[in-house]
Length: 172
Image (cartoon, rainbow, N blue to C red; front, side, top):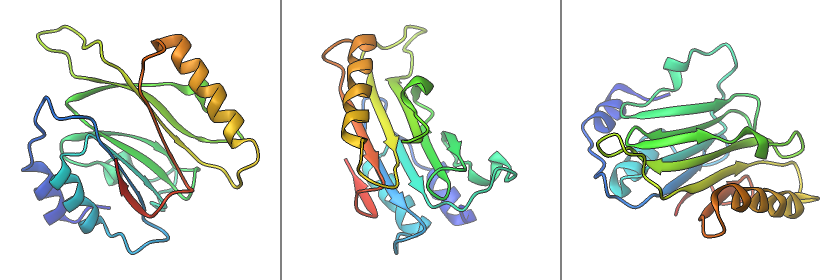
């Protein structure tokens, strides 16, 4: 997916450890968003999370094909034309599969900054990338998911959600 020059740009970029958590989303299938534009946006805002849909990746595509320098990633090839959530290696990410449903597939993760001197950071942000073919039931699903998140991580935990109802390239 990345061209060699894009990989070199990402490899040469340092994300400051105390940088606030940011999320960029891009639909590579239906927009004019190119990987080159996306990489520039990631570098400019020091994005910790990058959610891409419409990657066209199939289940038999090797993980190395979707890898980015300095980032780990989670793939759901059967969701929304190929879903990839890249997360910077300075972040500790726990996948939350109990929040995903067959009606609203995607990826939910709990994100912490990387451990400092072996001590796990306490501040958690939960991020969901949720996709559906329509809006019926989506609000109820998200409300139930947020209740589960707050029960597990506390009532003050921030929750960020993205999906296929947004614009082609966003950062937040």
